[in-house]
Every structure is written in structure tokens, then in C-alpha cells.
Image (cartoon, rainbow, N blue to C red; front, side, top):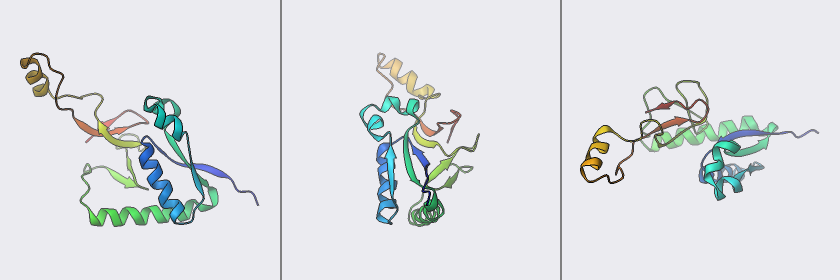
Length: 147
């Protein structure tokens, strides 16, 4: 029997990747993480290596999809997730509204990091580094940022 493996999903946060891996291992699926050590030791290399990759057996993909979809539905019922109106969640990932990729994550904005009023107040306070940064969803595939 030919057991092929494949990259099931990619994570730019090693902690998030380990949480998903632990869920799958608790459910009895064999899986492992690739590039976890590089991403943990030097997070600046995440973009270059493509993030932490979750590797699973091809035969388990349908069962894993069902398990993670069930977990997402339970989490969405128990909490009020603050997602954009046009964002969609698939397999515990936020889908990019521009290109449809599953590599969108929530974090510090890169294009419009600081509001004009933050910059103005920081300037008036003597050039102190801006004290508040904007956060949004960022697509690691196309670079699009959305709220």
C-alpha cells in the first residue's frame, strides 16, 4: 500500500500549528510539522520558508476536514468571533477576500500601520515612537490587507 503524505496547511505562527497538530494526534491521526524549528528560532524567516507546514497522510484528508470543520462550528457557537463581514472561515483558516487563499492571518498591519492621529500626537509629544498600531487580516499569498 502506497501511503503518500501532503502538506495539509501552512501556519505562520508555530504555536497555532502545534495546537492543530495536537488536535489531530488526539483524534488518532498521524501527522508532523515541517520547518517548525526554523520558524521558532527565527520568525523573520517565516515568509522565506513558507511558514510551518502540517504534513498528513493523503488517506486521512477527508476525515481531518470533517474533524476540523466540526471544531470550527463548535468554537463559532461558543464565542463571538470578530471577523470581517466578507471573510469566510474554512478549516480553521480565514480566506482572503482578494485572491481566495487560505493563508490569511490577523496581526499588525503592514501598509497602514499607524493612524494619522497617532502620528500627530507622537510628533507633538516630542517624536516618541507611535504608541498604537492598527491590526487587520493580512493575506500571505497576495499581500492584501482587510478588516
